[in-house]
Every structure is written in C-alpha cells, then in structure tokens.
Image 1 (cartoon, rainbow, N blue to C red):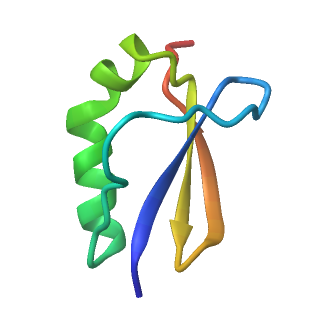
Image 2: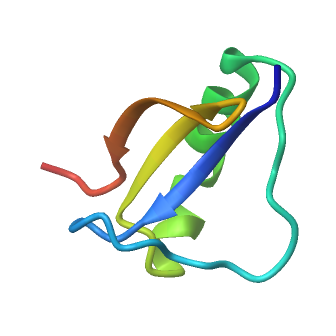
Image 3: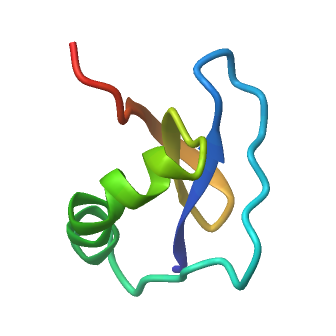
Length: 66
C-alpha cells in the first residue's frame, strides 16, 4: 500500500504543487507528515487535503481553522 495526499481548494478544485508527490508506507506516517506541513501547504494555496490509499480516497480534511 502507498499512502498519499491530494491537495485541493475548499471547493474540491485540484491544486498542483511543484515537485514530487510525497508517498508514505502507512496511514500514521501520512498523518504525521500533514501535521507538520499543513501551514506550509496553506501558504501554497492548499485549503483541504484528501488522504489516498493506493489511489482510493479515505477521507477529506480541511487545513483551515474554524
């Protein structure tokens, strides 16, 4: 299994970021990474993320407060 994040605007529009897509061996690794990186992602225009397990959407999470 490969865990990744898909980056989106609040309306679900895909946000393309330069560079490679981060891949994680487990869900916990992906969630720890997003906990460390969410502020930087917000600065790049990402408003929500979707956790993917081998391309299958597991859940969507807003990066915005409130």
